[in-house]
Length: 493
Image (cartoon, rainbow, N blue to C red; front, side, top):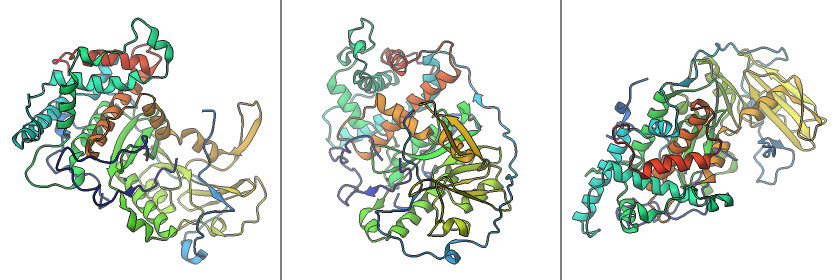
């Protein structure tokens, strides 16, 4: 996955605010990989709900590495003087001075059953806020004669609506045997809500308060984004290993995720895309620099409350640079990941255009902070560049699935082991994913985040729930969807 690729903003007509609910955002083909300004969501717009909580594969993807033959447009020549910094590099191996991991990972709340973990993710303040916003928007549409009638939604009815929304993804399962089971957990929607009522609630679905003045575009989803980040911060303490990458969302906005090694999402950020005309006017180097600058900003925002405790962070080359690595090491956070060979600050030996290297040759340089930059020629025309403050470049052997011994540098093995937190999350989301057609962009984003909360509930259940746990995500979905369709216990959420 090219994690930090910048999505093109749609045309002016497509990006107008959806004043009329009949105006819709264009439908992407599949869940895929999008702020006029590159800033974190503003929680001071009246949508901040942090006060709801107490404070506190066998197959391997292509390497994100350099190739000697590049089919893309050539970059202008770069001299070592303009790209390499005045950093002092040496061959003497050293380790960054980062503190030991200081936190005790685990669940902060008591939960055992699937329903317990659902209630941890979908807490009562979320339902109250969404129901309030839906009823306000429904009343507004009725007063504007855009709908014929409106009856206020209750929390119990919204639970049923959410259960039906999730149930569509379960029906689309490719586990054929489940269709012949007597208790297959596929609930008939007409037994719980009429199609007309479901459609009118979907039309009035709103993730922001009804306000008279116009707010910035991202305020339409700031409530659900802030809720997600706050509830994860207050429910679970992350493990040492963290991963940052861009998720493949079914909308034009850029969705950046902070996950652990088990694909549990701890924090998310959403930014708006860049106008296509602006991108076309840029050179390849300017586009790469813009992508890197914005990805760098996303990293610092995602890690804002995770620094100074000894985490180990894994990212790909769209994010990594010597400057960011030095910032993280100074804040007691290790970093490991692939690196663009010509990125500013790299050692001159790494930047040189002509590298007279044989297969399995490697060059490793260390700076005074203990940050290493290594280039390794993995195969003909294929160089791998890794930056790390934690793992060295010594050779390490592993036996692959074909029972053959494979030798690679230690930092490469570690990166391959932990890099796929976001990718695995996206694959799990796709298994039972459903998003109604012809929705405004903010509804697509909001429903997507609701399904992320649902998947987080399952990932937490697997790690901290009852033993033995339900082994399949499908069975977990059947249990909690049945609970939602029953209306749930209003006193427990």
